[in-house]
Length: 165
Image 1 (cartoon, rainbow, N blue to C red):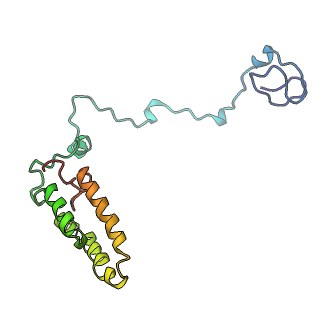
Image 2 (spheres, rainbow, N blue to C red):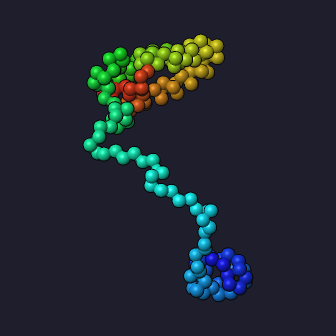
Image 3 (cartoon, rainbow, N blue to C red):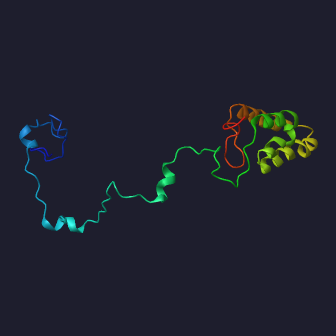
C-alpha cells in the first residue's frame, strides 16, 4: 500500500505514514488490484499435470515394507548368520577382573577397541610409568556404567543384556 501524499510504501496496519506523517485512510486499503499482463501468467491445464493415483486396494510393493517395521527383535531367528547374543553378566565379570586387558570388549566382538585398551594399558602404561592408566580407568568406568544401564552394544549394534541376561 502506498501513501497518497508522498507515494512511499507503508504498512496496512499503520494509521500514519512514517515518511510524511499523513493520516492513512481505509480508502487507500481498498485499492484496485494490479493488472497482470497475459505474458506474465502461464496457464496449466489439468492434462499437463502428471499425477499417479493409487487406490487403497492396490498392493504396495515390498520395498517400503522394512521402513514401517518397529524395533528389531533380536531374539527371533531373523539373521541366522549372526552369533548368539552376549551375556551382560559375563561382560561385567570380565571387565572387573580383566578390564585393563580389554578382554570384555573382545568378548563383545569389539576387537579394535579391545586391542586399543590393551595397548594403552600395558605397553604404554609401562613406557609412561603408569600415566595412561588414568585413561584406562576412565574407560573402564564408562564401560561398567554402560553395561549396567544396558547401553553398551556388541559388534553388531545389539544392546548387551537387553534381550537376555
